[in-house]
Length: 68
Ligand SMILES: [Zn+2]
Image (cartoon, rainbow, N blue to C red; front, side, top):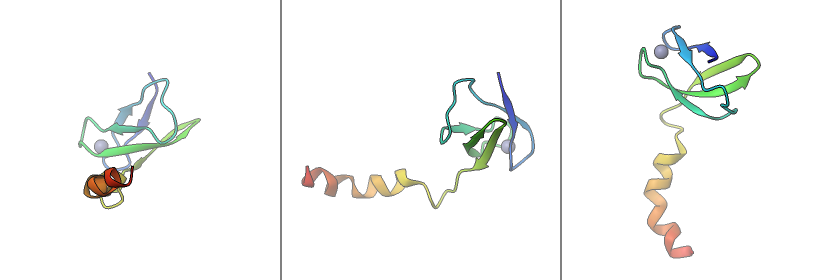
C-alpha cells in the first residue's frame, strides 16, 4: 500500500492503491483531513476546513431541493 507524508505532522499516511486525485484520507496520527493532490508520487495536502463544500451544501440543501 502506498504511503505519503502528512503535511501536518509528517507521519507516514497510508493511501489506498486505487486512490485518485481529490480523494480524501485521514491521517491516523493527527486526525487531519487530507486530500490526494498528486499520484506519482503520492502527495497529500491539508483539507481546508473553511473551504469544505459539504458544509455549504448542508446549509443550502433545502433550497436546492425546492428547485428540483
Ligand atoms: Zn498527521
